[in-house]
Image (cartoon, rainbow, N blue to C red; front, side, top):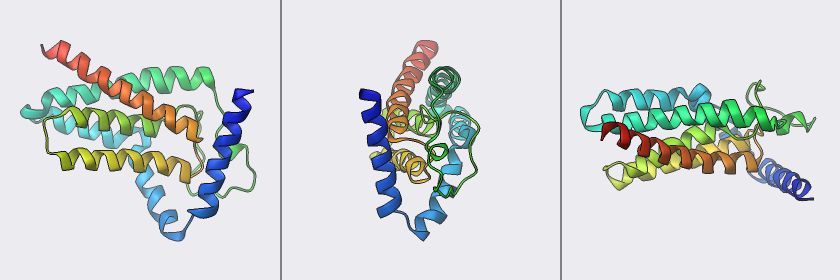
Length: 179
């Protein structure tokens, strides 16, 4: 069955990360880094800052709308419909580096918000190095969720896809609003 294959593949990837990439340096850095995504505060702050700068106001609106789409459709609707258990709840011997979470696993909200941010930044008229930096931030956020064993790879992959979609929707909707 396809769902069995997905779960087996998810655990194979998670366990490979734990076995071959787990180290003291990342154990210290990634819990701090992933905290930027808690409740989306970093990305909300970025939207508010952009809204306050006339040159980037449309992009702040785009990001704000993207985050709203992610909250409504990703975190409130899809997460609760799918109601997927987190990987650490299925494996007894895992040592968590972050506090256990109270919501469901699918899709990854941290990853979704990071990719909403990344997709909006990619469409902004700014230097390429800032777009690359946003991409590194988004991919590092996605990886941190796997490293910390709080999401399955399929949660993160769907979070990336939805985040990109919601980012595009945010830009499209802001363009319609701003004319």
